[in-house]
Image 1 (tube, helix red, strand yellow):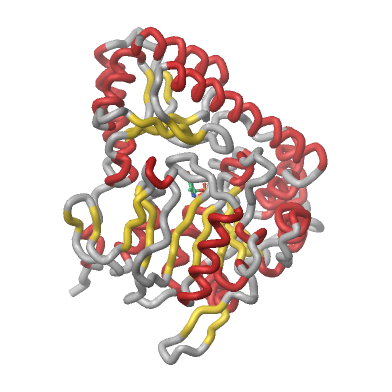
Image 2: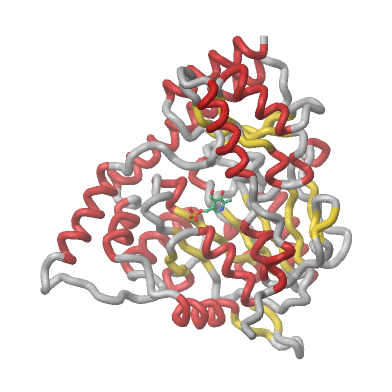
Amino acid sequence: MIRANDNYSKLKASYLFSDIAKKVNEYQQQNPDVHIIRLGIGDVTRALAPAVIKGFHEGVDEMANDVTFRGYGPEQGYAFLREAIAKNDFQDRGADILPDEIFVSDGAKCDTGNFQELFAKDIKVAIPDPVYPAYLDTNVMAGRTGEYENGRYNGIVYMDCLKENNFLPNLPDEQVDLIYLCFPNNPTGSTATKKVLTAWVEYAKENHALILFDAAYESFIRDEALPKTIYEITGAKEVAVEFRSFSKTAGFTGTRCGFTVIPKDCMIYDSKGEKISLHAMWNRRHITKFNGVSYPVQKAAQAVYSEEGHAQVKSQIAYYLNNADIISKTIESFGFDYIGGKNSPYIWIDGAGRDSWDFFDLLLTKAGVVCTPGGGFGRCGKYYIRISAFNSLENVILAMDRLKEALK
Ligand code: PLP
């Protein structure tokens, strides 16, 4: 008899975005003339930059000629892209990361989700609340949790991110083995200083733990004092893996490219307490289960690091950050508390005791604006909503004008 993985039955169905879509569709049917403005899902809206398109085309043209055609490429990514990443994203910031410590992939969702399979089933996992759902659900699938009760899975160490701690997880009171961190954060938009990350690196060293650091939104950091990579922190190479993505950095959500950094100094332990190279383990996993990112896509990603590509993607980020600024100022003018929107495309708004789905309904029905109810990201998001800056400037201005009318 072919038996199912029982852990899947523990998963709480991910209703968030389908529930939002259902409510939005119903509202649209009842109000066909309303132009609904979507500031909910965190997907980019602007076209790929011209330099990126040029790189993409060059890659496609090479595939059209027997002489330059490429078949299977290196599973870890082409050297031209790994070298560009290592130099521009790390070495130029004083972080000593080498090209062969970078594994190019089809995105950070797959990598953050797949990475947990390198660890034993009975490790203690610490996850922030609210959280990007892939970290939690993939650990549920792997059998690292008990049942779901009162909005939480038994066995997980949840790290509450609330106003009281500035939406930054506190160091756990108990010993944990695997720690998920994400800065700038989705959904809250909070950022972590070097001091905050240093405390985590020290915790990981003391406890022989590993940090999985998701930096998918690092390109939104404008504050020069904030670290863009965890490897700006001394000692992080021994205890942290970093996930990156071209999705939000350069509009690759539909093109698909990201990468994971695993320094060779990073060790985990076998059941006898002997050190094992995490780099070697992921490499083994990668060559077994992954056949590389398509050549034209890697050429497109390489173009992000050219002089013109860099300037173009920077201006796209500036465009979204300007939207975020407009949203933040409007929210502030209503007297709502919020965080994010400065070094992040997300604004996390305190509904002052209003349930996040009620707040969602209010914005939809009174203003035709779609946000994301915070409850969908965890128990700590129950009284918050997330507004995203990923839309056109015109739509953001229109949405804010409507909110001013609706909430006055
Ligand atoms: N990590 C975080 C925190 C995200 O918010 C997202 C996407 O929204 C991802 C990873 C996924 O990125 P990718 O498109 O590279 O799979």
